[in-house]
Structure formats: structure tokens, C-alpha cells
Length: 311
Ligand SMILES: Cc1cc2nc3c(=O)[nH]c(=O)nc-3n(C[C@H](O)[C@H](O)[C@H](O)COP(=O)(O)OP(=O)(O)OC[C@H]3O[C@@H](n4cnc5c(N)ncnc54)[C@H](O)[C@@H]3O)c2cc1C
Image (cartoon, rainbow, N blue to C red; front, side, top):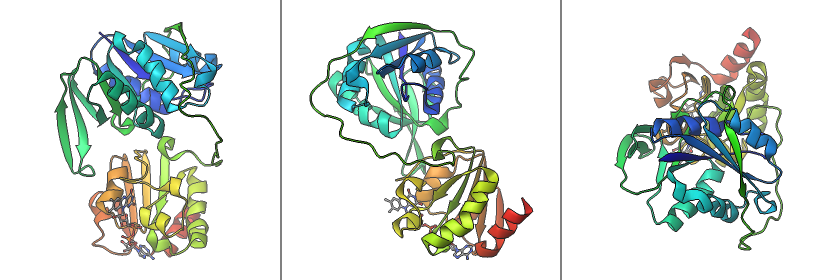
């Protein structure tokens, strides 16, 4: 049977999470990997998906009902072709997590969430208890509906493939929801889940002003994304969408620099798969040092500006 990957896209480009999900799809060893691009006037995104290495076919469903990514309509689009597939994979992003359960429920199968490893076509690994244990899940469902933790899989090459693009009829609007508006955060900095380098600040920063004053120059110097602990977000030092951790974003950049973050398990759950971890903390007993490749026991208000100067 064949594997279907649901592309995350903005109608013009395919988002990086799709590439990791394709790798997970290939790992399912169930046959060809197809990618569904459900959008409106999304030919460019479909063409980009066709170039992903390892993709055999792109199914381009184009309809005004898919313009705003409404979960009800995207789920209906997936369900229209679901029976042709043994595995249906979504990235475990906000979008993917919005659509996958609807698909699983309608197919009457158990969703397998947040998969970090594929052991065999029916056996998958996923972290539980904030990443402190790994559950090995075996599914006997005929169609496996899976969300993929993207940090668990390397991205497939975005170019090099030459898949055929096949048009599929777009579904009609379900009428169950309608698009009202969207507020998009605009930032010059790389998006957290795609950033190669992330610098994160914690409660130790003490105020929003200090957070910006101390952390922003380091992020600018390194062209890094800015992250924060939940304590920093809850205290209003940093915006919500910067939160890294169990209830924030799961990231795995090449380099993660944690400044004044203690390293609570809920924070570690979101960043401990980073390739190189640097921690700056004045408490030598801080748990963050147990996962850090490089630890600097220092006052961040001195160390971070010195680091910026040295860079
Ligand atoms: C259900 C649940 C979900 C959660 N989800 C998340 C999540 O997604 N993400 C998350 O981050 N947390 C999460 N938390 C909260 C988590 O348990 C911690 O409370 C939080 O991560 C602590 O943030 P912090 O490290 O910034 O603050 P603290 O734990 O207060 O640590 C501050 C650190 O700064 C150091 N420090 C102080 N001053 C300086 C200085 N001048 N220079 C250098 N170091 C200094 C201290 O030594 C200390 O280690 C969750 C908790 C629960 C219960």
C-alpha cells in the first residue's frame, strides 16, 4: 500500500515540516509516498512538493474551500482519498494536530500521535511523560493516521525529486466553520521551529525590557530565533509563541543557548534533542547543565554581553 503525507504549505511554498514528514513516510516502508497539497491556487506549492526527494506523486486538490486551511474542509479532502492509503501522515504542527484527529475519528481508527521513530510499518515510537519515557505503539488498524514529531526525522531533500502532479477534485465547503481573520506575527528573525540557532531566556531576565536588551543582541549576532521558558512567558517578558517546551514549541536546532533557564523537565522536553546545547546559569546545580554540551556558570547579565562582544 501507499503512504500519504499531508503537506503543510502556504499555497506558494511547502513548509519545512513537510520534509521531515516525508522522511517519516519513507520510513514506514509501505510503498510509494504521495503528498497531498490541499489549497487554493496552490500550483506553486504542488510543484515544490513534486521536487521533494522520495515523493512518487503529488495530489493537488485545489478549491476555494481550501484557501484558509479550515480543518473541517482539509479533513474532508483527506477523507476523500484516504481509502487508497495504508498510512496517512501529518506533521505534528498546530495545523496537522487540528486535522489528523478528525480524519482518524471519521475512519474509526486510533490516531498515533507525535511519532519520533518508525520501527516497522505497524510499530512506532513516541515520547510520553514529557519525553521521560518512550512508548512503543503497535497498530492493527488498516489505515494508520499518524502525527509526526518533526524533530525526530531529518528533512528530506527539498529538491532532486520529480514526482508527477495529479489533480484531484477539491471538496465543497463543509459550512461548519468560516474564516474570520488572521493576525500574523511578523519577525525578521527565523521562525523557532525552523531556526538553526535558538537563544532562549528564562525567568532570570527579570523584565521584558531586560529580555530584549540582553537577548536580542545575541540573537541578532547569531541570526538566531528567540525562545523563552514558560516562566519568562508567563511573567510577560516574552510573547507566547516564543515558549519552548512541553506546552510550547518542540525544537531541535543545531545550537540552543539557554540563558537563565533552570532546565525543568517541561522545558527540556522541548529542546533536549538540539544538536549542541549551551547553558549559562549562575547556579552550578541547575538541571540544565545535565543536558548541556557546554555549561558556563556565570551571571548572564555579564556573560551574554561579553559573548556578543566576542562574536
Ligand atoms: C504542565 C506543565 C507544563 C509546562 N510547560 C512548560 C514549557 O512548555 N516550557 C517551559 O519552559 N516550562 C514549562 N513549564 C514550567 C516549568 O516547570 C518551569 O517552571 C519553567 O520552565 C521555569 O522557567 P525558568 O527556568 O525560566 O525559571 P526558573 O526555574 O525560576 O529558573 C531560573 C534560572 O535562572 C538562574 N538565574 C537566576 N539569575 C541568574 C543570572 N543573573 N544569571 C544566570 N542565571 C541566573 C537560576 O539559577 C535558575 O536556574 C510547565 C510546567 C507544567 C506544570
